[in-house]
Image (cartoon, rainbow, N blue to C red; front, side, top):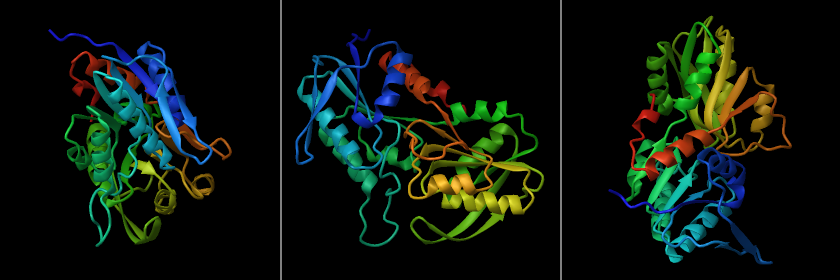
Length: 314
């Protein structure tokens, strides 16, 4: 029989909006912590309550700026030094995940470096969602709970009652994910092939598969500048698609992404709340589905030593 250690949730500054929802769904209040900021920009997190002997879950997505990652590292270190029993880093969005290999000479493997830093800070477990590359789990020498947005996206796709549908991958890298969805939803599969001029810039694109008369659903793990997404959507509409919707777990939405989506032929972009939308932008085409209940449920199962495999519907 496992002895139980009290569970406590804490949050970094940038993920408070999501952490409050996760804590509420779980049924406990967020723990009290604060950040002292010095005039030169240096900051120091501290816990305003004891974490001795507790299982501590620290919730923080590591989207830019880099302060979000460093704040998480300092919070992990502080909990570790305050004699927490276990420290679990919950990163709904794991930044630097696009740097998972050397794709050209003399570059860093940023995802591995972030994994090393988290381990050095003292994490005992990592919980994250829709990594850019599945193999990043292997960069950690601690257990990784890798959740998928499919358990949130699939019910929503079904609720749209679209027929016939085609599941599309915006690039060759996303074909495996799209194939899993298309098999589950018993729909056809479309793949976009693109050539990149350089990072964040697409050269030309071709569509492999039949889209005419179909409601196309483009799936991706993240949408950053939305260049690929909007180019793919416009191309599919030109080829006779009935409508195009896009589903992306992480709405990074940098640069002119909001304007691109607004001006594109995409009917709707569906993202989760792993990253907050900007309030100063036009979000009329963007729908946000929350991951709070999913994370609360998985945290509960991990804490109670139960299997989480039933949360993977695809």
